[in-house]
Image 1 (cartoon, one colour):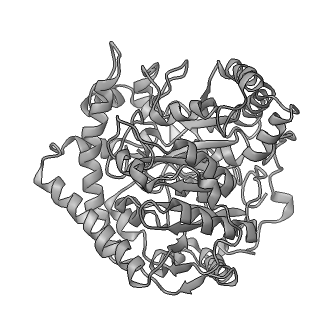
Image 2 (cartoon, rainbow, N blue to C red):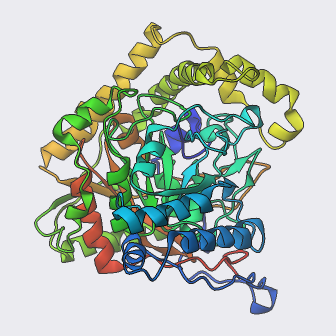
Image 3 (cartoon, rainbow, N blue to C red):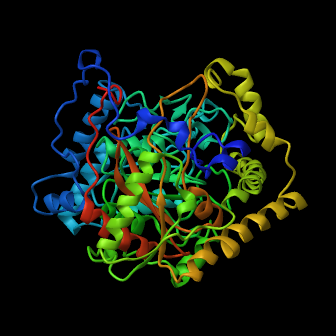
Length: 547
């Protein structure tokens, strides 16, 4: 459903190697910048009355009658027009719902008549353009092949958002097909949405594939957003855009009605500016769904939708936190911030176990990629067959043919090598698939995360989420240098990224990784760290890191 970069065997093997030399000395904090005379001027960005507003603040204002959902929704639509379509031209929103204002007005009337229906009542939310919505918007994964595709019913997560009272403001841009089309892809680019840009430095990549969701939340184009992840696609744009992102346990949130990559790793999750907002949104997304049998496990008692009760500023006291040093070491400035974060965890009362390395991380790349190829072919075919369209693609082979016949618009910068590789795979009954899946589960769970968590009786692991955002490069593709998303992604375990600091003005995050169904505990630890450090600061829409 999402992957955090052009995913190749080569990149996966290198992901956890020491890559600090790749960054170069100029990337270090405090590095020299060009003379002031050569710095590009900041774009004109209008002031915004709801800048950095939280769900709790907005709900309080609406409860007191000082604010309406109509006015709030109108303000965010205006902000999208000013920053996404004009000004910095962030290109984080593919389309807005033409009925959003009418929905907001209806929610205002409902509040006056009955009170709020849920914690998101009247709050504008964006969803990634791979989440089905049965309204006047389309669901396309950013591809021209699905233009005009309007699903018959909402994805389960979209339905739960409406039940919680949210105004689904629009569809966020993404790395087309959730970054699972080419080994040379440019994160944040889609044929429908164009190139999404990082709000901290407009020539930098926002990472992906939930690029638009991350940029829109960071730039205050919405209150919160829904992203999706297969391996890194919530965590990577969260670290690159200075956000909190939660990748839930597989089975906590339904995947029904979401354009897939791989059912063994896909999940939707919240992206927000604060841990509290992410916790609120997660509670609204979690829940059992008959269309997704994996959610039955979460509904049996492991899932808890009241995540606000874990917001404890003293939540690190006595917690045993392991330091996954082998998931770091890819950027010297990030390592320095990570060391400072680890020291802060100890100061806040955590029992720090250092090191607490995750076994077998360098052995996951090849079997994971094999699993994704098999599951993508099967999953995308099933999704396309489910669409009630008279015309349009019905299989992966059809998508490949469409892209070839629309090469100028669909493949101006990179091709579809991954599509071709997946098309060559057989059914999910193939021995090669079953062997790769068993290897992934064994190395990531029992012999991986379970081993290190149990050996030292840890409540969570920590590691740097990723490196600072790289320059957008349509010629060579992404320049991903490192991160920690794969062990939890392959295992299906939860992870949470929270802002950790800045490198040359570019945000980077700290990831907490835990056991299955431990989202509450991760929220508790991350909230305590967030409240003690307050690293989040809004972007300034600089042209480059030197402006």
